[in-house]
Amino acid sequence: MVTRRDFFRDAGVLALGAGLVSRAGAAALPEAAVMKDAKTTPPPLPGDGRPFHPVVTLNGWSLPWRLNQGIKEFHLVAEPVVREFAPGMNANLWGYNGQSPGPTIEVVEGDRVRIFVTNRLPEATSVHWHGQRLPNGMDGVAGLTQPRIPVGKTFVYEFEARRAGTFMYHPHSDEMVQMAMGMMGFWITHPKDENFMRVDRDFVFLLNSFDITPGSATPQVNTMLDFNLWGFNSRVFPGIDAMRVRQNDRVRVRVGNLTMTNHPVHLHGHEFTVTGTDGGWTPPASRWPEVTVDIGVGQMRAIEFDATEPGDWAFHCHKSHHTMNAMGHKVPTMIGVDHRGIAEKISKLVPDYMVMGERGMGDMAEMEMPLPENTLPMMTGDGPFGSVEMGGMFTMLQVRADQKPGDYSDPGWYKHPPGSVAYEWTGELPEPSTRDSAGGQSMPAQVKPANTAPVEIKPPSRKSSGHSGH
Ligand SMILES: [Cu+2]
Image (cartoon, rainbow, N blue to C red; front, side, top):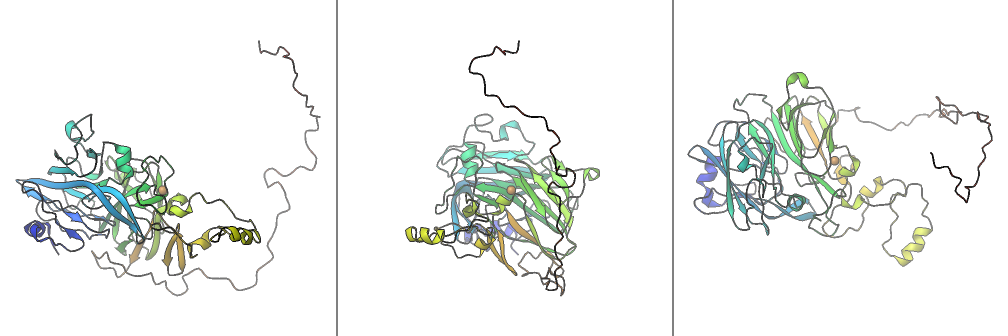
């Protein structure tokens, strides 16, 4: 296990495993650590500073710091990055320290924090610390509370992390473009008392959306609503890591939404309560159980539950278009259309012509369909029983009795106890009962029309008849 203290001692050595390397910077600046890949990096131990229980950033990592005379110093570098959305697709994004989203920043309530922000983008930027109480001039709204950070320059933000909770950071300068390009990150302020609302597993991710035309790699930055790739931490299923937990663990999942629409996030197999929002921890008396929480634009939610049920449980946005990748959009409905003959004729003109979705689109998940370079099938992911027929904002909660505390590695597919999987009925089928009523139950069809008054339809008068309403 490498601690943060080791990281800074060895900072010149360029190696920290798990894709984390150091980037030698100016001596006066803290090291700008950079992450090379999109793997989930297990939580690092807090090195110097006060103790806390770190979070796990799905397909991401937490930024190391330097303690300088009691102040926690971080170095964010805003820069173009290449982010792998899932094996087979890379996107040209803008992010921080090698990845989009940027690294998670973890501090403790009451910490004095100094963040150096270096701008390596082709345009000016700023960083807004979404949800924090801080001096107005540190709020990061370009033009309003500070000048823009010019290309090539480094600005310093400094404030006290006054409130424990779940926060985000993102640019407040050419915001539409910079957020459409993937600039965002998570911020956790841990409570002073490390045992306050203690959980065994604490996962964080940002919801995000991109509009990347199949075959290209750079997002369209002016899209308002019609995005075609939906993700957790700039990854799309099947590229999103599962949340692996031990049976009976207390689990917290913190989700932030920096897309342009709401996302009803749904967990299978368990009920949870919302224990935290944008504004802090919810009072226990205000909590109620649910299985789906709608996360509005700009909001954060922390949900908690006891992972009592072993299995591979789906965890996904319930807007079904958001569990699809790019190729599923703008496909006409073909259910019930008989293409026989027509397909044959068209294929003489268009050799690769393929009939899509005549029996629904589920078959397409397993179909070997020619795709443009650098895109993903619209729904995919091989499970133990075939294709999962999903994409986008979808992953799993994997609950295992034998997952070790602190072990986030892949346990393999759940082994269902014999006789506990839905199975095919092979016995006799009774005749289906049918209903006689054509009109439903509450409004039965009438044999004779109730209103027999003749309806006379007159053509409109050519001349104004003077019905002016006065
Ligand atoms: Cu959604």
